[in-house]
Image (cartoon, rainbow, N blue to C red; front, side, top):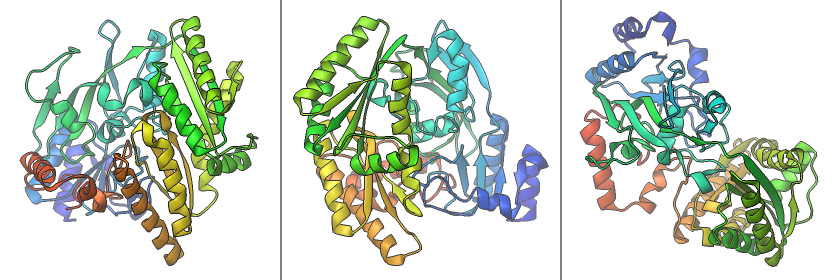
Length: 457
C-alpha cells in the first residue's frame, strides 16, 4: 500500500490506530473458519466520522475495505479476501443509551453481546438472541451476520431485534434508517437490508436495539432418543403443540461421545440427546409446558430427565456448550456448517448427514438448534492430507445439496461469506441474483466494501 495512503489513514484515526506490522496482519488474516486472507493494513476507527473518512479515501482510490468485529464468524465474512484495509470496529464499544421506558438500547458496533446483557440486567431486561460466542462477539458482527443462537427458536434472530441503524455507505455517506417506534412502514425497510448483509453494503456504526423483560423462571429437560427418527418426531411434536420452548437443542451420538471424553460426562446409550428449555413469568406456566413436553418425548420413545436444581440445569447446558471445543480435539481441521431445514425434516437431514459421512469416508458430528431446523454438521478432517481435505469439501457440498433438496437453505446463521459463495447459485436463481447485484452496485458503485463475499465476484 502506498505510503501516502498509510499517512492519510494515520491522519484520520491517529498512528496508534493503524498497523502494518506483519505479525499483527497475520493475526487478523482469518476468522473462526478455515478461510484466510492477508490485509495490507489494519485500522481501528473510534467514531462514525473516522469510518466515513476511511471509506471516502478507499472509494476514491479503489481500495478494498473489510469490516470486522471480534472475528468469531464461521464463514470467512470478515476475512480480507482481496487485501486492502481491514477495518476493526472493536474500539467503538460504548453503550450510548438504555431507555427502560421504550425498552430500547443504543450501542456502538464494538459492544460485546455479554457485556451488553450484563449492563441490562439491573433493569430486568435482556437482548434475547444469544450466539455461542456471546462472551466475545460484537453487536456489529451479530447484526452483519444476522446471528441467532440457542434461544432463536422462541425469540428469533438479530433481525427481529434491530430497530434502527446508523450505517456508513461505501461512498462515505452516513445513513440513519429505521425508527424508535415498534411499528414503521414508512418507505423501504432498509434496516432489514443491512441486517445479514455480511458487511457488503455498509459499515454499521450505531444500532438501536429492542430489548425484553428477562423471564423470572426457567426449567430444563434432557431427552435421549433411541433413533434419529424418534428424535425428529419428538422435536416436531414439541414445536407444534404450542409449548413455545426457549431452546430446543440436539447433539448426536458422535458429539456426545466427544463431550463425554472432553468434559468427563456420562450419557445413556442413544442416537441423540435433546435439550428443551422453557422460560416464563410464572412458575406454574413453565412447569406445565415442561410436563407436556416430557409426555410428548416419552410417547415418541425417548427417555427423559428433568433438571431438579439450578446445578443440574447448568450441567445440561455445560454438555451443550462443550460440543465445539470437544470436537476440536478430535482432528486438526474442521468445517462448521449450518445447513438449515424445515422442522419436519430434521430427522431426514440427520440421517442424510450420516450417509454423507459414510459415502465420503469422513467423521461428521452434528449438533445444533433442532427446534428451528438449524443444524451444525461439523466435518472433522486433517487439512494436511490433500485427499482427506478433498473428501471433506465434497462432503460439505453434499450436505448443502441435501439441505436444499429438503426445502432448506445453505445457512441459517453463519452467513455465506467465502465458505459457501461457490454454492450460492444452487439456492438463488438468476433473477434474484440480478436484483442482489443491482442493490450492491447502487450502494457500492466501485465495489470496495468486503469484495469477494456471498456470490464471490
